[in-house]
Image (tube, rainbow, N blue to C red; front, side):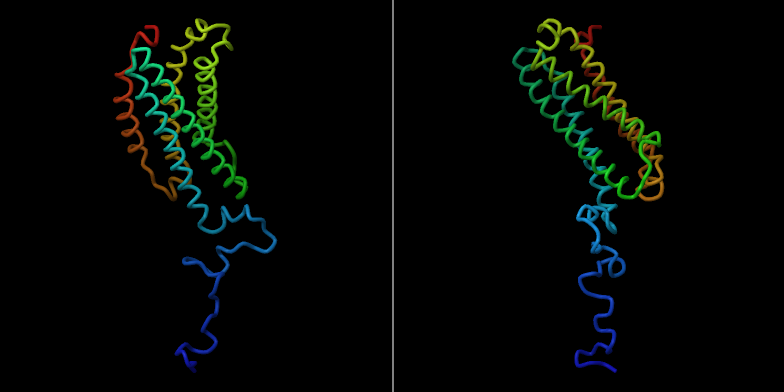
Length: 220
């Protein structure tokens, strides 16, 4: 029997209301009464959103790092070097903040779902790359802005070439880490990012970056 609204009685609002998400059953995306707000970040399809933002944050970090390198490479006059170094440092610090945010997101998801930590090749390479990024930033800032840490400006300048070399190594490590990510279970089962696509993109980027290296700046 239908009600005055034309909807069969007993079925008008069954299972519907605030607890029913656009996709899924009622309660699938609802915070439980005994749960803290922190779980809202991973309830239902929020996990997929977290993976998306993790990918974007990591991509932004690598993008900014590459731009920082491209910006500084052509500088050669004192003014160009000073201006280039300041922007180079700003871009790299922004990149590191983006990478740290990505690490926090992925680790929070793993903790919330009792996932394994730093066991896959991608995870191990990623951790090593994160550490190298952090060390590179600290040394780079210290040698330029606080050279007294190394005893003198002259001593600080002596390690410039090593800073540049390690920067290119870290960029290469970043691409290897991204390539390793294509072999993770989540990518194979959900994201489907192809290894060949990552390799092609990485090679194209390196073809644009490496030929611009100035041998003199590396002490060659």
